[in-house]
Length: 191
Image (tube, rainbow, N blue to C red; front, side, top):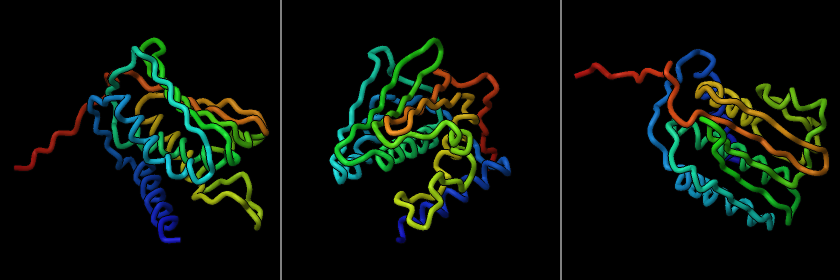
């Protein structure tokens, strides 16, 4: 599949850039509701193909976040597509966004297959897929959660997981509401 190959190549390039320190963050003021709705619209056809109900809950106090919009989109797309991929037909997937102190927490949850406790630490390793059998049911590059972890770290956030086999999972990305003091934008000096 051409799309699968293109995603694999782009994911590999992103991981290589991160590991070599060649990824610059471009902080902007991001409209959280607009961003989340656009990401949900993007994954809606995938959810509809499995008759999965998508739920969205946005804390009324959350309006904007200072973040790298491209990287935040990649985080949400990876988490949402994983949630849909690992949820049975007619299940539920949700995106909840709320303010907690000086952070905004993006929680993607599902009623999917869940993850065994012994496998949680393996989730964020590059190219690791928990089902490595020949008859593997779920397609993927094995890089999505690696990128989620790395982009979250780069934006000085935290990533946590709550999961139970056969019940579902919840991935929570907490990002600072404003850009970290250590961030200094790169100014292009070219004329």
